[in-house]
Amino acid sequence: MQTLNLKAPAKVNYLLDVIRRRPDGYHELRMVMQRINLCDEISISLTDSPALTVTCDKNGVPDGPDNIAWKAARIMLDLSGSNQGADIVITKNIPVAAGLGGGSSDAATVLMGFNELLNLSLPDKRLMEIGVTLGADVPFFIFKNTALAEGIGEKLSVMPEMPKMWILIINPGVHVSTAWVYRSLELTNERVLSTLPQFYRTAEDICSIFNNDLESVTIPAFPVIADIKKLMIQYGSTGSMMSGSGSTVFGIFSNKKEAENAGKLISTGTDWYSAVVETL
Image (cartoon, rainbow, N blue to C red):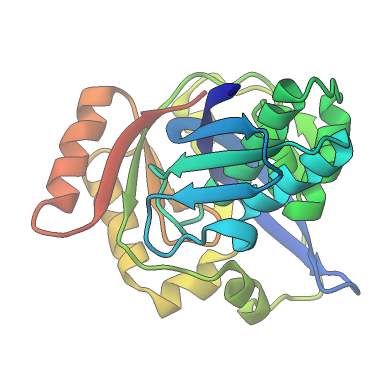
């Protein structure tokens, strides 16, 4: 039995501008997306039986056909024309429904893993075309660079080089529906987009582009997000923001020790998820 063990990294959004609602119901976006070294672990084993199984260790994450990773695997097995099946085991380390892209990253990692296991040799561009049919963030994790993402998130270009950053992640355990956030978003007709810098040398340079239009929906519904942002700044973060549609808040710190200290101060006495990670 051929087995591949892979890591699926999370992401944070340094920028999330919502430009307009499109006639097809999707939203035109401008995002800056950064991978971090908080990863789900995925084991893919090809089997001689045609059955495809996905199991996950986290409550609330579906097994089987309702899992986005299952859908990714099914597409690749069908493309291969093989009668083989597969057993996929996902160990979730990335908080679920938290704005960190865990499900999208799992799907992207499964696409890349099957491409290798089945010797399909599909180029990343083709995998990204398949990925966007599963979810708007999936192509980013195949792209494997800090990216400017436009369109619904599928038009990707490489951002200028950014320094490695220590990031504190706090998740208050609130599950936020991305679909609900976008449905609830009120857009003004005219939107003037800020000009993005060409160079990023410091944490301050990165924090200068911080903006997340989705905070206007998520924070009024879950004020704890604003509380965590304030605490991040109070305990030394250069900048803090909600990632994606929430509810995760992240802050950039000048070193690992400061980030760890802030994490302890903010999360002590709560059941909040806290992790110090580094950008990839």
